[in-house]
Amino acid sequence: MVLKCVGCNKEYSEERIKFTCDTCGRHLEVSRELTWLTDEEKKHNHLGVWRYKDLLLITSMERIVSLGEGNTPLIKCNKLARSIGLKKLYLKCEHISPTGSFKDRGITVAVSKALELKLKNIFCASTGNTAASLAAYSAKAGINAVFILPKNVPKGKLAQIIGGGKTLRINGNFDDAMSIVKEIGNRN
Image 1 (cartoon, rainbow, N blue to C red):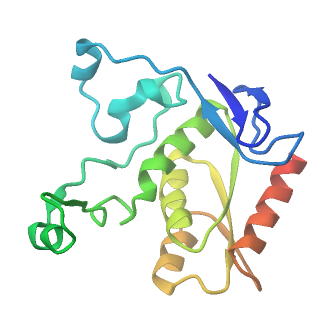
Image 2: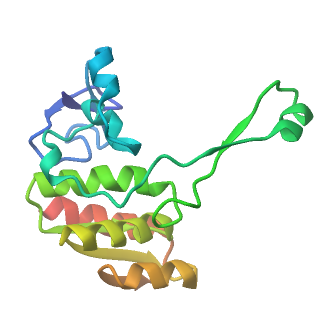
């Protein structure tokens, strides 16, 4: 498994904490040769996103940080399906996730990887859902979280975020917040 630039295809080792390419500055994505799971692997009893652990970046299940994310139901929408010319349509019901957001699926993996890498701090730019999810998972993991937020974060989300780490509200938008987080990341 390697991290690969989406622009110039330069590859980096997964052991190196890196988010953008040194050559062209574009984002890195995980590049991994996938193999089909055996019947035995399909049977293992992990629920939610962790049933796919073999496809994720986690090397050990010992440091998994989970709040019971995943396994949200599919809701059949016959009337909507007919109105747009489909035979079947299902919508995923994500509001019953631990923080009320589909972001919990990715954040459980991110915080688990942070523990695996023995990171002590996580920085996050967000307009609400990502930070609310990260606040819950980082609090459970005992990792310090710092949230860089634009002023327009909804009060309900802000209430979820404040309990999970330090917040810095800036007089700017999400892109401004993300620029600050990237600058912090590049210093470390």
